[in-house]
Image 1 (tube, rainbow over the protein chains, first blue to last red):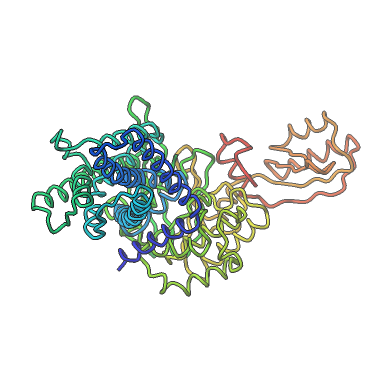
Image 2 (image 1 turned 45 degrees about the vertical axis):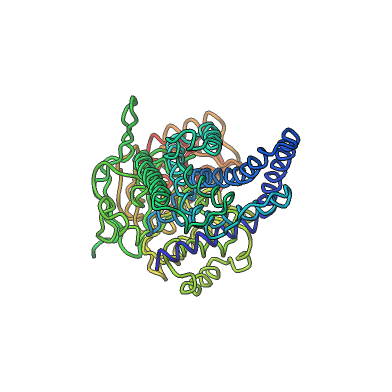
Length: 258
Length: 323
């Protein structure tokens, strides 16, 4: 039961922060949609009467929303740990009876639910703005997104570990954001090896669901295997590297310092 | 009686590649009994915070052992943590953007306890700490003293046996510091909690602690009851009230005969005199009499922990001690 209570406590805290600072969250969404509308208008203007562009615009709509999710998931883990260290609350979280990794996983599960809701909200608004219709199979998208985002949490954990060790890693976080843009653009059809990168396979599957009307029932065993294994591998690598960094931080006594 | 907390030959070494090793805690041993308030004293950089962080599992130690209710913090950290809560770095350990109640509920939950089952305790703590009116106030909007009270209340919400407090009265005004001292005594006496506090504030230690340890440069200097530590000094303190301030040469003459002399900053003619031996007072009186200095009164002052502390930790600078 103690794991359930700690999970609920983390969920309640996230909800309180979201509710209390709703204006900041809303402005973030408005800016995001505003930039999308501007980019979309530009793309339409350049490709007027270009039939081939229609499909690209669908891809752009979904890709942009997924990029937003990916950025959130990756930076959420890294930023939240660094932020707790900066505030001085990380030490308290390390002194609880439940392992700190459980608290992190709890936060990630809750964040995934929030991100998924935002994803559907943003996609709906984007469809309204552009007039483009895509297949919004809520269950299929949610499950694929839920599993896929854990690979990015793994990357976030590596960043968080580096953040605890080196304190200032803003430049590295900035560069990684550009790498994620690359991950969102490149297709495994052109470069097969990139499907081993975090979130790439999930992104492809979500694109297939939304653009071609697939559902998770049509996923092959290879699809499921790749989706789950890549996410698990990145999450495990993330946890292991974070644990290594944590061990060093506990030896140096730097947990509460920032 | 088996101590609830035992620190045995603790050693903490900080080592960074390419840099010289730094021994922060060197062979420090002490034990704390259930229901006791135990003081951990030392000047800045003495190793107090390192010791506390080793005890609560936030810092790995290289030598010795820490036993919390018999559990080794090296081998059974999670079992040891079941009995420890801590307030570190003043009041930074709480969420300033959440209300007092939300903080208490959050820390109950993440420690694996049911907020519904601990509601009674939460209400009791709000009352005990006089935070009922502030229960729905965001912590950021509270005064420093209030924040400190919230942090201590949070450390008690999980009902653990040992509370570690690092500088609990730092930056508090006189009234709030007094209130906190009273609270600490109540917690130990009425709830049977064991409190280990690290502080610069000698008044807190004198008023609340049963026993103490003084460390300097990572090493133990003294470990005894507060009463016995105060008896350690052989100096005699007197408060002299003179009609007028002493002239410079007279001041120097008395200074030469005494261990220390301090003049009051805000009142003329009042001096605090520390002597090595009661007989030295005769010499001082002779100097005053032969120079026709009018004496208003003379009173003996009991030894204070502050004086002993300064004596024992000679390297400490005056400005590092707050009284």
